[in-house]
Length: 108
Length: 129
Length: 198
Image 1 (cartoon, each protein chain N blue to C red):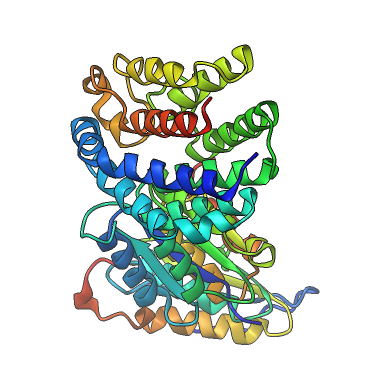
Image 2 (cartoon, rainbow over the protein chains, first blue to last red):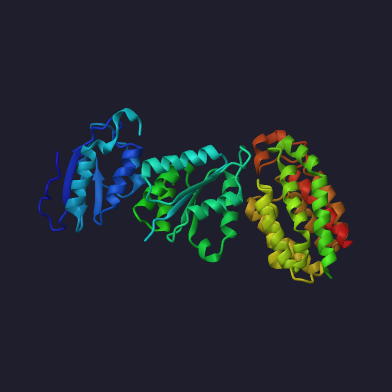
């Protein structure tokens, strides 16, 4: 799955989604990577595990870690701001790259 | 603007060093990081001199967030902070958060360039309210 | 009131007393703590003894502050910061020529600082169980009988149950042993009152 151009809303919300395919899902290390990447963008970025939310601040390491989404979950991203499109693309790419984790490292 | 530094203070040198390892491996090198732990003779304890040295090593213009484990670690961290000059004292916080998780979370927040109060607040979100 | 020779004698007598009682303090601490109190205090007071001449050249508040800093850095453990806080807080409040009343007031605020540092109160089997009763006697009787009060107070820590510090891990098993911090506080008070003739 790839980042999709947002359906033209007034707030210029960009959306994208990707399935968690790494073994441990959104555990500690992936959560840290996700929030770090999100923080590198100016936009407001939210994550959800359902298309309709509830939405969680992608820049909050504590909130992201609490999601505990297992492998197979689809993560939905929403971003608004100047670099929203790039942010969503980068986050989707991170998930699709399996957070650059070597799978044999086990629980992360 | 520099990132907030993280100092880990545990009674055990191994816990402190291990927590620092986790921060390095999970969060990376963008945050100044140092630890203090053990009584210097291989036993459990914390030492104000060691804590001061760790604060120095992790010093950042953005300030330093300290993560502690049990009682004495907090007491001695407070003592160390009070022994610094006023300008530095104002830029140091002790986080009320579990030491290992708090260190990783605080460092994650710090690595994004967040200011000291936000780093502390994020680490403290870990405790259920 | 406080000439250089008195200051020097205060430092050397206190240091020699701590060094002399190191093994006893260690034995007390082995019973209920981590067994390092005697050695830690000895290390700290040896450092003070080595610096005694320089320290006693300073004005009283500066001397007390320097002693506090040395104790924090050299004693280590939990007692270094607690004794360090006691002396540093005394330094803040005391004047060069203290009267018994002004010294007593400074002592009161130093006790408050130790309470805050250790987050502890009277009756928790700590050094405060000597400091606070001694202050009470000082207020009541104007500086007479402080050494006796200190001795009685240290003895009174024996039946107490520790709820602060390492000794608290023992719970009821801490009962029956004198608190090593209470003992070292008693020794210091005895020594200081002897030097000052109080």
